[in-house]
Image 1 (tube, rainbow, N blue to C red):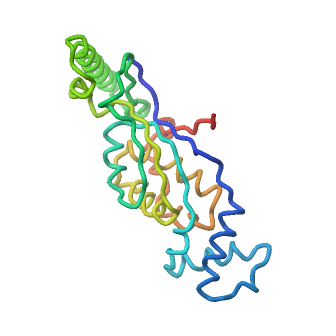
Image 2 (cartoon, helix red, strand yellow):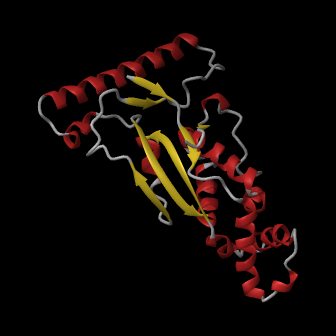
Image 3 (spheres, helix red, strand yellow):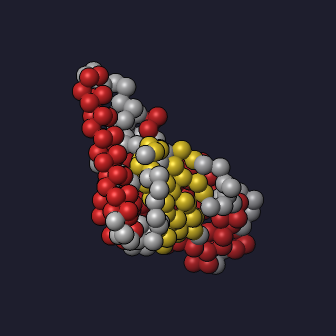
Length: 229
């Protein structure tokens, strides 16, 4: 049994200059103001149209992200309708060494009851171990992976690729980075938002204050960005 952290990587680098140029051309189509295009005009224009609620403009560009996460968080994320998903299939993947996503509370070093916290870890590890043994036993009895997967818990690691246009990413971040979202969801989506905002503050910067990291969540449990292979 392997305990791993959630992680993500961009499928390709975000080309800030090209994306802004593309969005500006789309926006200026509405006003037929192409003559106003200059070196820095895209920054001002994109911020302006977003502030006015004219977000259809940012639908013309998309970003693809590969995410390692738990089955539980995956089930919530794939509820978004305006995105494309390709998800690791437990029907066809036959697991030998099952990986489980470490829960958000694992490194809660601020816990005052260390004995109780250690007990929670022990319970979680035992549960994952029993699930893995049950899964392997089912396979040994001749069960196909699509049947044996019934023994797998929601913490089981899965991998997905998600592609969405920038407007849908704004919607995803609004819901999934909210302090009301599940901590495991925030642990994944907050660093993705930060990556997007670093590259495209013109598109995502206005959201930062509303979805600021909840101080109750230990940053050490957040997802990490993987290098592009």
